[in-house]
Image (tube, rainbow, N blue to C red; front, side, top):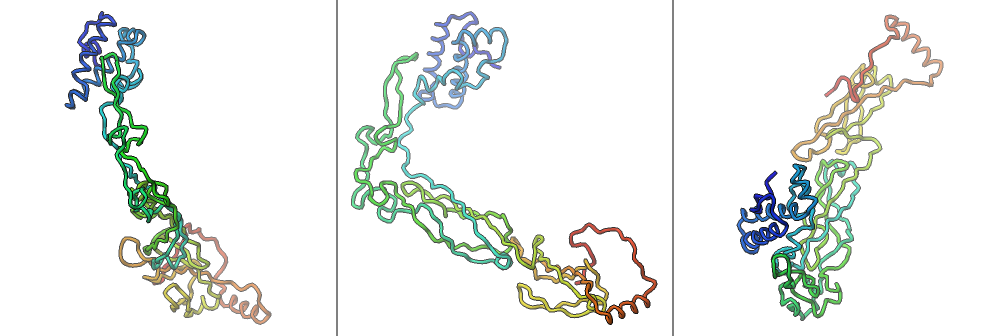
Length: 361
């Protein structure tokens, strides 16, 4: 913690008047309007903070007793921000721009699984702020223009001289007539009422890349609301919502499905034709395939979002055990059971993988 007495250049037994005079002298030398050097600004903050502490009897007593700094070394604040009190927030910054950046917008778009696999272009309507076609963002009625504010002379600030602890100082405040813009609109545009923008429904063509996932958010720079007075447009954010498919699921960039195989086809093997997003394909169910085994079809999954190529189609086998048999069918199974007496019902350790099993490529 710095020594506040040393910062002001006074003795520890200095009177309130001596502290006030020391601060006034240093403030006039170090004020940013007089001395813009960075080191001078830092010292001015330290001097101001020291005065905050020592000018108040209670905080000075606490400081002299070795207690914590009542204002925490924050500098500007705690005592009413002496900088703003004496100097009105500093020198004039000139008129501010009327044009402002528009707000961002957020929409949701629903996608089907096949649109995710290959990508899609969709047209969506957005209720937003667009540039006023009548005034083209100028805010003025066609044929007219803005005029310099008569009150502030285009400065956007009103300066006043006030008496303070430091003598006569000049304060600056935004002009109430032009609201700090430095210009006024004598004849506002009728269509946008002097705002330079209007509300309208706008159609946007969205190019949704292949491989997006549910919950992914895309950012479209400059596609949000047009700013006030024709200012820069905000951004448009698009949230992806992918609908569930009746047959196919998704794990990463792989597609998954379950193929129900009759018991005799699982035992003897067969060829099966299935419909995929790439059309009909033929797969082989090898003799003796078990429930849980996976047939892997390469390159029939989802397009990779950030690279070339596609994931795979993983087909999980589900062997269907018949439940309704006639007497002849039951007799056939009894005969089969008699021929395979070496096989019996037994326990096996359960596999915990979601799609665990032997893969058939």
